Image (tube, rainbow over all chains, first blue to last red; front, side, top):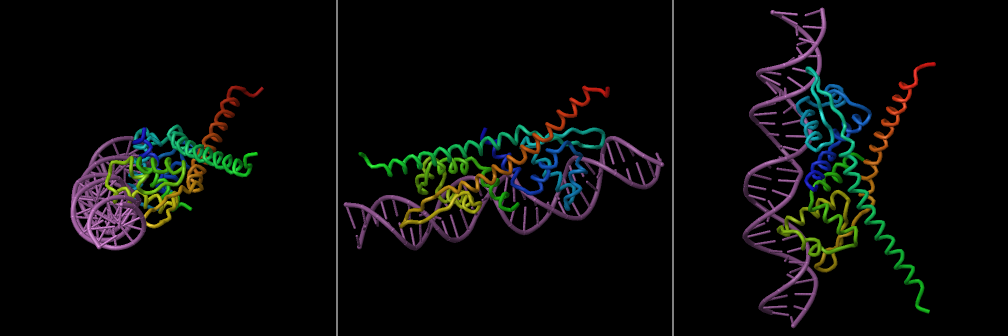
Length: 109
Length: 109
DNA sequence: CAGTTACTTAGCCACATGGCTAACCAACTC
DNA sequence: GAGTTGGTTAGCCATGTGGCTAAGTAACTG
């Protein structure tokens, strides 16, 4: 699902949004709670939350006048999966280089 | 290094660039080789390569008229590290919830 | 040296992005 | 019901983003 990964990585490409992710991993929080530590206007901050929601990294529910946000850890895991797969490609290549180097060190007898 | 992570995740937020990363993990390649499978104008494709280089995900060297690109696996690993740390936060929280649930199932005797 | 190949620069486009302010609506409290 | 609180919508800005075409430079080949 290439498009989803686009959204996910794009959402993580901002320090404010990464801070929100970290906070939510510790438990659900309201918009106000999340906004507090950030020195920016609330509408701007809400845009960040919207982007996280569009990427599927968070979901929100409104209770009365309060909106609570929850992390979607599975989406984070999908991004990590992609990176882990790249690491495996790289490690496989290092293994092949290592084997080649060893073969070159042992001339035919 | 928050700004660097911004660039890294932003660079990975595009399917063309992710495809380039995957290809380079299998070994260095020229611009032409990398460009081949992508149906877009070369200058546009070069912009993508530039973004990968700015993010520190690749490095390039020019030999004559050919530019060869190499992956910088350590930068990929830094991104994976961040995600792995988030997973650990999440797992820690799940552990705490589990312990709490078990405590609630065992009333004081 | 002419033609070809590999890459580079410049300029354009529509849309997206991180911020802002202003105005507004809904829920809540006293 | 007035005032407060929590969030939403709309519009603005400068810059960035994925693409395009046109033109150019450098390296290579026969």
